[in-house]
Image (tube, rainbow, N blue to C red; front, side, top):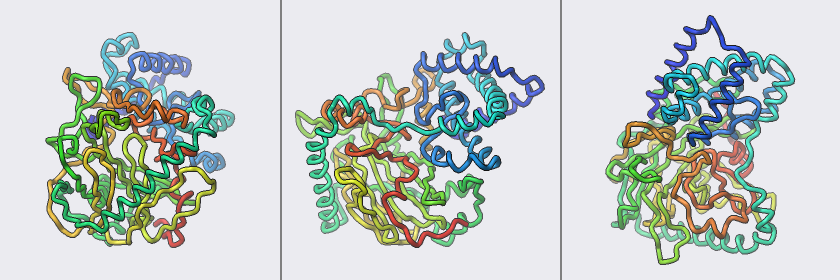
Length: 490
């Protein structure tokens, strides 16, 4: 489902709900509705795992960024109301995808004619329960406590796997990979940047310059949490300006990327005939400021076997690249993972200094390269290896030409069209893409990471085997980097 379709459904729901506002549903009926709805969604397997369902508040969901405001919203009713609205919108959006993916046979027992009617009823009940529940200070306190998002680590596995003892062999393997990665980046710097085996993909539009980007940030209002409220046009301009160029060493179809599509199997396929980059707008916090993050993801059909016993090979692979901007729209830190949450690397600009790890023996911040501060008109080039799709080099563009790629919103993966005319999420109810399991899971389960190596949904990326770290941690940058000259928010 694209953004316009999702927006259309939400708009229809609001209009229909408004027409029935003269007779709002009773709270008791709404409690029952959410109980039946959740049971139906779980039974049908259409649960969306991208955000955290808040216990006791079935009409609200949280994520790590919003959860970071919990202590700050309790003393200010206006700020609490803005925070509450963000929680409500997270649930509303997830419900749209869950209900659109729900087979029609599951809707009839709910007493609704179609998914749009179910969305209308859900929104009306959410408004009613929010009004009745949160009129009590005790319920507000409970909400603030329950909005915390649990981490992605299975503590039982760490206990059964004797995690303190298992960290020794894991630490040796991880140190070896980190040393190899740094060496690989140095080799790339020393080599000829024009690689004959690399296929170059680039966005088709010229980037804005630094002044134009700063104007966008200056004119954009922020809500009471400090979250910028970009216009659609400005959001588009930001995504196109900071979109990277991909130079991918290519030796087979497995090195070409495209959109995910549903065929006849249990795992989505990749249409390599249409180079497509998925994008997501996110936010992080640095002290008292909210910083903008632009996230770009590409999907490959597979990671092929390098030999007969390759524990890392399997269906689907990808690369996620993130740009964190300061309050004027200038890049501060770049970082990258694969969609399994693996291979987390940071690439700070000279303005960000990595802090020492507070604890020995944990994965803190692998920095294979530091980048100079340049204007947005010079795109960053990501150089990746064939087969493994490892990121092995970054540089700024010198003006070569390549194949133009298109964009898609990452949320489209939550409701992909199927061959029978319905929709289905690329991700399972656990946030993992079915059929993308790797053999490495049999070795790494004592780290507590579920189904190590499998491709997973945003919000479900644990990125460290030693210690605890998530790609969407709200303080990920703040904890690891010192940025002394960070400008004030406009």
